[in-house]
Amino acid sequence: MSDTANNKPSTPPAPVCEARHVWTEFGDVVIHRDLNLVMERGEIMALVGGSGSGKTTLLRHIVGLTEPSRGDILLFGENLHALERERRQRLMTRLGMLFQQGALFSALSVFDNIAFPLRELKQFDEDTIHTLVMHKLTLVELEPQHASLLPAQLSGGMIKRVGLARALALEPELLVLDEPTAGLDPDRSSKFVGLIKQIKQTLGLTVLFVTHDIDTLIAMSDRVAVLADKHIITACSLQALGEVDHPFVTNFFQGIHARMERS
Amino acid sequence: MAAASFEIDQDTKGRRRVRLLGQWSLRALDNDFAELKQALQPFFSDPFTQWDLLATEQLDTAGATVLLNGWEGKLDARMQVTDEQRALFTTLQGLRAPQRTGSRIDWALPLVATGELVLKFAQHLTDFVQLIGLLLLEMLYLLRRPSAFPWREFMANIYKSGVTALPVTGLLGFMIGIAMSYLMSSQLRTFGADIFIVNILGLSMIRELGPILMAILVAGRSGSAMTAQIGVMRVTEEIDALTTMGVSRILRIVLPKVLGLTFVAPFLVLWTSFWGLAGGALSANTELGLSFRFFFDYLPMVVEPVNLTLSLFKGVLFGFVVTLVACHFGLRIMPNTESLSASTTSSVVTAITSVILLDAAFAILTRGIGV
Image 1 (tube, rainbow over the protein chains, first blue to last red):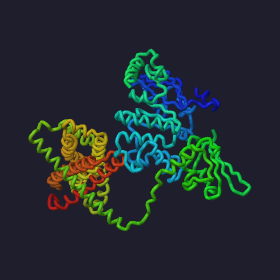
Image 2: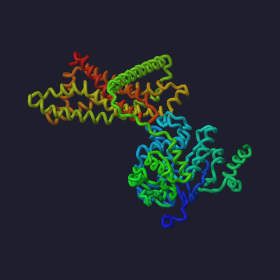
Image 3: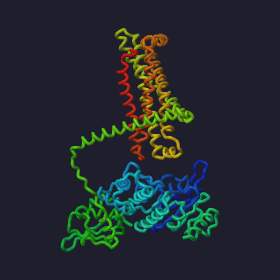
């Protein structure tokens, strides 16, 4: 599998992210069975599924935190785990992840949190880093005076926005969001969705996100990948989801339908 | 798709023209902006250089910022840019410039720092006294409502900080006993005062080393664990959760720890002193030929039993202080990793220091008793 992938000519550009025949097993428990997924450049894809269906595990595979037991995860056409260390580090700067709880470094200020990935590159002087951090702060609509606060002094919505700013610090091609609107009130969450869409336009991102929130799903996604029965049963547009015959999808789609008719 | 690069043209008037090519963005993995900046430095410093950005494939904020900083923040007719790039440069120009804080030497700094230290110490002291007060109030409450006593937590603390500490305290006492007895026996033999090994070992082990060894080990083992535990409970809002359920945090978290360790500490002192004496007796037996029977028969004759009482009292006191210090620092932890590590360190250091200070004070106050 990986051999054919590596020998593939670089044109046309490889999909941003691809899962090929992925199996995940913890002991006897099978989480993913022969899972396949392709993400194209520039799309916003939602990953939905019931609780405990392995969405977060798949997300962790994609960003390289864990490795599937079988099969390959290809990022920009390359298998992260097969690469040598330095190449892998560079490739991982091409993706940004927003964790569910923000995962900000609690001992660092907002400024230092966002500056962290930039400093790690060791290519920029402090003036450049300052400008770039301030740019990311304006991008997520935070004020310059917030830069000196510590994560413990921030509200939930601000933590998400700082987390987003940090994920965007290196202007990645792929942005991975784990429950971006969980814990935000409806107003904040629709604003946050608007923000992500706007940034996606500005920077030309590909976005993959997990959500339980139907409003977020309707507002954001170009395509929906449904994870049920241990694999991706379909990856299609929201409208096309109505024709899929699967108990989870039918149930889920009824909720979407009701919501869409109301609005 | 190509990495960032540039080429130089020279026009007829001798003016240089820098044409930027490729992807001036972080997305091209082979780019190194530090090197690019270095290579462009001679052109940045020449005010007549023309810049042509029309042929770039991509320009992101990182690339643009490096260029803009090179141009000292100015964008004028020398630079040929697309409208899109101009918009990006204008956005970057609009951002607040880094504020230069002057590195003036502040002569008042040592004074200010000392003052802050004193204030901080006073704050700690107030909080500490407050904690003792709260603890006393809870005990008064328990006198009225004995059924509210947290037996499970009390027992759990006895097990965690007492029973599981038995192997390490015993081993340490035994080793110290052997080492001391071994070193002293050779000294005593030169004076022919072999028999005094029992006096010296008995007094030092029972009166001094038993309580001190126990206190240091318990401060390192259980004190740090208590601070970290209370700290994480604060960070994860578990303590707030307890309070909303109507459970007093002092009664449920601090009190069982304090009472548990204070209760078990004298027993740990006995245990440590016993193993210290056993190690000493073993060493005296091999080095000086004193029999075990003689050692332990002779011991109560030369070391007054009141020393044991003092030692047990010290055990109670040290156990109390170590736990109280641990809980005090635990309750002050702020929700970040830095504060957690700093407070745990302070907890152990403060506990050991105060135990040793107390021991010195105790030695002076009781100098007339038992020796």
